Image 1 (cartoon, rainbow, N blue to C red):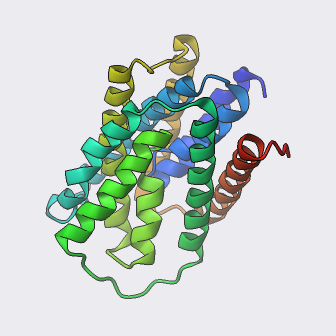
Image 2 (tube, helix red, strand yellow):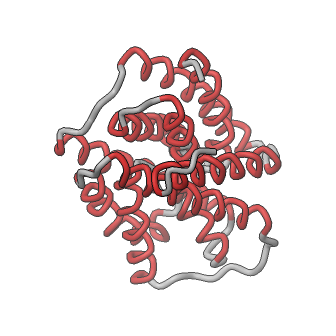
Length: 251
């Protein structure tokens, strides 16, 4: 895939993900893993793009009064330091792509479960449960370069924690703080690598896509079918990475 196509592709990724409170990190990683070979550059680029997209979404949620800090603060107690720790860990290329592939498979699976779930009554979690769940996903987000919202949001939907708008607002700020922590960790570990010519073009693309997606989210635009297709793409790329780097099977 030529690099010239990436800004157009990433515009639509940001458009969809921002509409449901995500940054798009899993799809950025999936696409970048097909066109780039430096896995540190892949992680760094995905985290930067995450930050730009979810910053827009977080501001929209704050403006509309959706963000409920008293409900969500426990999720960040362990997620921020563990996201930093995960990013500091230096991995071999094979190990990284296996972890990334496994994370993408789980992300795609959780997304499909989320789309298939029917609405039922919500329930509140204890603070220790929020802390443990946030910390576990924070560690995975730091290691893989995914902000973590794509894991956290479907899990909360499946466990019936709160209404979709509150979960989307939590996912947005969760991705933001964990992506920042991960980026700091990469920089401290000396593994922050980016192609500045490419990253500027991608930032412009995701900012426009993220802004439009946040607007559509506020208008409750239905992107469920596109989300299902995105989940299938994530599953495919995740399986492809696991098979190629774990079993030397190329599909």
